[in-house]
Length: 513
Image (cartoon, rainbow, N blue to C red; front, side):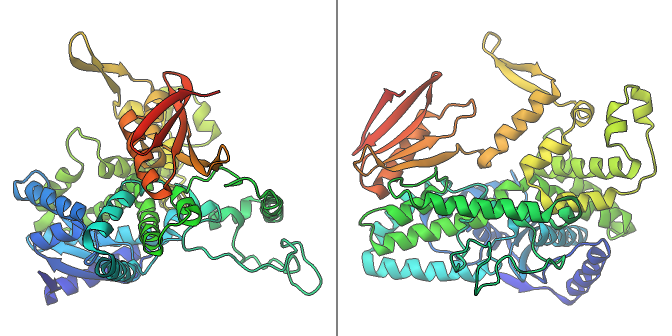
C-alpha cells in the first residue's frame, strides 16, 4: 500500500532538501512515497521498481525478504530509484528521526546517481522503460505461451552478467547511437565541418574524462588519439573474416547480432535483459562509494547541521550504530569511513610527495597544513571514480593499519580460521579482486566462427583465479541454448590452458596450446 507524504513529512522533506542543497549536493527532483513492509518487500524483489515483468525469481526474492524482515534478521529503511525524477520509498513504521535520516540519505544517493561518471549513460526514465518491457514480454506470453517465454527468460537471466563492465569508455553502450559520418573520419574534408571547429572550452572531453581534468590534459593530443582509434577501427572493418574482429566482452550483444535463426521475440527479450543489466551495472560498480556517500552526508546533516534535533539524537545514534556499528565491514561502513578519512587528509594536507616521504610517524600524526580542501576532494572523488579505483587509491596502508584489517584463512588442521596476513598490499588487492567485474569472471567472445564451423569460442580473462567448473558448465549450457551450436571456452585448469566444450548436454575438456 502506498501513501503520499502527510503534511508534516512534506514540510520535513522541504527542510531536508534545503539542507542538502546547502551542502552542495545536486540532485534530481525526488518524489517520496510511504509504503508498508509488504509493499516494500515486493518493490525490493522487483529490484526497486513498482512494475516489472513477472518472473518466478522475483517471487522467490520476495519470499526471502519477507522471511528476513518478518523474523527481524534484516531491517529496511528506504529504497531509491535512479530516475529523473527520482523515486524513493519510506517505510511507514520508521520513527520521525529515522525518516529524517532516510530522506537525507536519499538526497545524497540521488546526487550520486546524477553526478557519478558510471551513471552518466544510464536511462533516466527507467521507471517507464521497465513498464514498456513488461508490456512487451506480456505480449509475447500471449502469442508464444507462458512456459516457453519464461524458460527463455530463465536462460537469459542466468547469463545477464555477460556484458562489458566498462562500456562507457568505448562505443558499445546499449543506448548509444552511431553518428553518421561523411567518411573523413573526423579529419575534415570539403563540404564538412569536421576538424574546423574552434575549441570554445565548453566541448566535451574525449574518453569520457571528468570535467575537472580540463586544465590538466592536452585536449588536442587526446582528441587526435581518439580519432586515430576511429581510423584503426575503420581499417579493421576491412578484415571481414574475423567475427568479431577484436575480442568482444559484451557477449549478449554478440549473441543478439550474430546468432543465426534467432526468432525475433527471443532477440527482443535478450535485448531487454541486456538493457536492464546495463542499467544495474553502475550500481554494482559503485556500491561502496554510493552507500558511503549517502551515509556520510546523512550523518553530516543529522549531526553537524542539527537535523536530528536534540530530542532525536539518541534515536539517531542507535539507528546509525545499526548501520555502521560492530566489527562487520559492510559497504555503508567502509565507504563512510573512507570518505571521512579523505576529508580529514585533504583538510590537513596529509597527501602529496612531502607527506608520503616523511618517515617520522609522530610528525605524520600531528601533520596539519590547514589546507581545508576536504569537501572539494570528496566531491571530485564522487564524480569520477568507481569502487575499484576508490579502493585502490584511498584504502591506504595507514588506513588499513589503523582499521586493524587482516585476512583470515582456514587452518585445515585446527579446522578454524586464523589470521593469514596483515600486509596492506595483500588486503587491498583482495578487495579489488572481489570487486573486479562485479565479482563475476570476465568472459569474452573470441571467435564466432571457430574452426570455420560457426561454433562459438569464448575466452576467460585469467587473473590468477580459475573458473569454477560448475559455473563454467552452466554458462556454456546457457549460451548454447541461444547460439544453437557447440560452444567452447578457453581457460586455465590446474595451471594449464584448456578448452571446455559443450555440445547438446555433453562437456569435454581438452588441453590447448
